Structure formats: structure tokens, C-alpha cells
Image 1 (cartoon, helix red, strand yellow):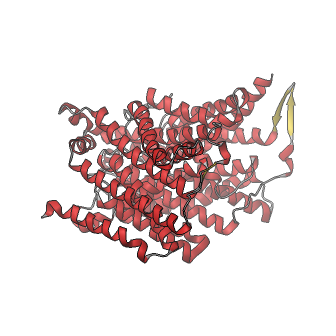
Image 2 (tube, rainbow over the protein chains, first blue to last red; image 1 turned 135 degrees about the vertical axis):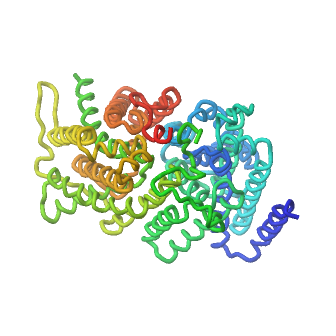
Image 3 (cartoon, rainbow over the protein chains, first blue to last red; image 1 turned 180 degrees about the vertical axis):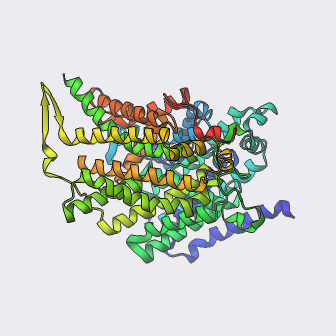
Length: 327
Length: 293
């Protein structure tokens, strides 16, 4: 029974998502679409951060790459579906090319390098002719009615979110999943066991990049206009990190909780507090990091909370390979 | 001569980057904490000096001390009573937590002072000296001298004072530091507050050179990241050297290539340096890495 529990829950969730447009008005459809987009991206980040333990801090860059792939292709007369397929492939190729050198770096070094990649891509897009430069690029409008548009994009984001969750679940139980978790536990030990570290790390990052790129592709068509600064905003990456960490990294359900929680809370704060909503959101993130550092899912396991008060590593420290991974 | 003038401008810019970067590198090196809120403390410093200048006409170069004190007083309890609890959970958790802190502080500043661009402009702002065909503007020159003094002061403090010794000991091995009686929690809080004070000083310095606004810290933080990685994590002289390299690369690529691709050059350089030499150009091994080795 437990074996099938995940798939039963998933079927239930997919059914609810399929029926949701009947119950939601235009405003809530927009909010729900955006929440689902964040779920997909958080789950994608979870694969490289939560399972492999590599803090891919610039993962938001793939959102930009995917978005620009769709925008540029559609401006050259390519249809949406082939363009969307390309927005999956191009980030995947970039992650492969960059991943081989960059994934050799660990912890801080890797995090910083991905930030560097994010800003280098931003600067490149701002200066290339065919991307519209700094002033952005408009995407051909969706030809249907406003209502059809909101339903179609809701289903697209819902589909992508479901795909991301399924991919994460499949990765978790696969050879790849065991390999990257072994790498997180100790890269040297994994290598001794005969795990090809580079191969599996790159594979995990490519999957992560492809899912994030697809989100960017759909977003570009949905929004109708994209510009470099917001598509490569480092805040996107930070927000994804917080969603994964607050929910619980390395679990399938955690990032979903984190993404839905953060998006719903920030939407609520925005509608009730207006100008101060970012300050309050910041305070919530600060307090969550201080008091629930292992994520919401950990709340069930009170006994396992870390007690290293002065910085002694507890059983899980994200992203830092202290003492060369042999601790 | 033109090249020489550009180099001089680059070096003076590098001084300001340096003050921002050494504080950041210190916090990162000593307690393995990437402090995103460094940006907010820069903003707090700049606005403290702006407030004192507009209300009491205090000279910004004098109010640097006040800006530093404000940031120090604010930062100490934050690390002592909040961030110290997040610290054992690793780099990424502290990164997320300080991001929240940054968002909070920055938006409080935005609420109080609005998002408008402001400037701190004392009467001598346009004064400059000529040195043959070269021009040395007074304010950037003063700021550069101060920046060098601050960095040298920090270096001496870490190397010579007993508190500095305690900070370095904690960075090298926190368990051993505790055994010999160093109050690690207090050292962390002090280090964080010192980093915040340096951030505030750099914020005020930036305020005398260009306009300030509540989001200014974020733009500088990305540069500080590059510098810290270039110079070597946790290395104070490395941060200064990294600042000079970045500012020179920026000035030269703006002059000889195009002003538009300055960031592309800077960030590509960063990625290449990281891949080839992860410990940074001049860095020794990272403090935190040796902590539990």
C-alpha cells in the first residue's frame, strides 16, 4: 500500500488540478498558475540541491534561458510547441557544457560559480542583437480569448508541476537518485564505490535545468513580454532556495509545501499590507531560518533537531563540504 | 596618459569596493556565513550619513563613524540572538536567513526614506587637483585614502589585538577555540557586527561618490561576491587585491571593449578563476575548510 501512496496522492492532486478552472475566477487562476510554476522550479532545484547537495545558486538563470529561447524562436515564426521543446533542450545543453567544469567545484565555490554564470548570461542577453538587448522582447500573443488563455496556461503550468514532481519521485528511486545521494553523503566514498561522480552530477543538473527552462518557456508566452533583468533576477534563485529549504530539501513533498506556502503567504501579505509586504516576508524568512532550519517537514521529528550550538556540524549541513567531505 | 588616468580612476574605485569586500570576506571566512544582509548594512550606513547631512549638516566623512556605530549596534544582537542559531545548519541556511534579514532591513529603509534617489553632496564635492595632465578629484581621493586606512586597520586589528587573535583562532578551529576559553558565540556576534560596520562605512563612501537609493546595496553585493571569490575567501589582503583587479578590469573593459560588456567580462573572469583556481588568485585555503579538518 505504501508503495502506491505517492501515485494515489498524485492522481488525487492531478484530478483536483484538472477541475480547478471550474471553481476559480480569473484572479485566482493567475495566482494558481504562478504557484504551480514555482512548484515546478522548486522541485527542479531540489534535484540538484536536495539530492546531490550542490547549492546551484544561479538556477534561476535557466528560467531566463528558457524564456528567451521561446521568445526568440516565436519571433522568428516558430510555433509555441516546438519553441517550448527547444526551451527544454537549450538549458539542458548549457547545463551540460557548463556543468562539466563547474560541478567539479564544491560548496561555496560551486554556489558562487553559478551566480557568475547567471550574471554572465544576463550581460550576454543584454548585449546580443537578436534578444532585444536591455529593452526586452515581446512574444506573439496567444490567439484565443482571455478566458481560454487563462485556462490553457493554468493547465500548462499544472502539467509542468506534475511532471516535475513525477520526475523527482522517479529520480529518487533510480540509480541516478542513489548515486547523487551517495555523492551528497561523501563524494570520495561514492567515487571509491565506483560511482562516476561527474556523469551523475551533470545528469542531475541537466534535468534540473530542463524543468526550469520549460517553466521559463511557458512563462514567456504567458506574460507576452520578457526583459533580461527580471528573467535573470537573482531573487528568483534565492526565492527557490528558500522554498526548497523551508519545505524540506531532499524530499519530494517538501518543495511543493515550500513553494505553495511562500507564494500564498506573499500574495496574502501583498494584498493586505501593500508596501510593507516585502519587509514582513523578509522577517518570516529570517525567523523560519532561525527557528525551523530543517524545513517544515522536520517539524514532525522534534528529537532529531540539531543541537550543535556553536557551529559544530549537525548531521546535515547543506552545501558545505566541511572537512573535505570526510566528516 | 589617457590609460594612466583610467588606471587611477580604477584604483580609486577599487578602494571603495575593498572596504565593502573585506567586511564580507571576514564574516564568510570566520564563521562560514555568506551574509546577504551586507547589502542592507551598506544601505543603512549610506542613509545614516544622508540623514545626518540633511538634518544636522554633518560632513559625510565625519559621519562615517556614526554610520559604523549604528550598523554595529544593530548587527551585534542580530547575530548573537538570531543568526547564531541558524549557523550550525550550514552555509545555505544562513544564506537564506540573511537574505530574509536583508529583505526586511532594506524595505524598512525604503519605508522610512522612500525609494527616491538621494545624494550627499558637501561643498567640496567638485574640488579636484591637477597633477600635470592628470586629474585627481578630491572626494574619491579622500575616500580611497580612508578605504586603505580601514583595510590596514582591520588587518592590524586581526593580527595584533587579542580580540583579533580570538577571531582568527575561532576561524581556524572553533572547537579548539572553545576549549581554550574563547566565547565563540560572542566572537561570532562581534565579527558579524564588525563586518556590518565596514559595510556601513562603504555605504557612506559610495554615498559621497554617487546617488543612493534603498536597492543600492544589492548592486554592490554582486560585485563584492566577485571580489571575494577572486581574492580568496576569508583572506583580507586578498579581498583588497580582488577589489583592485575587479575595478581595473571594469575600467579597462569599459575603455577598450564596450561599457556594456563590463559585467560579462567580470563574471566570466569569475567563473574561469573559480574553475582554474577555486581558492582565489591570492587566497590560501579557506578558513572554514580547515575548521573541522
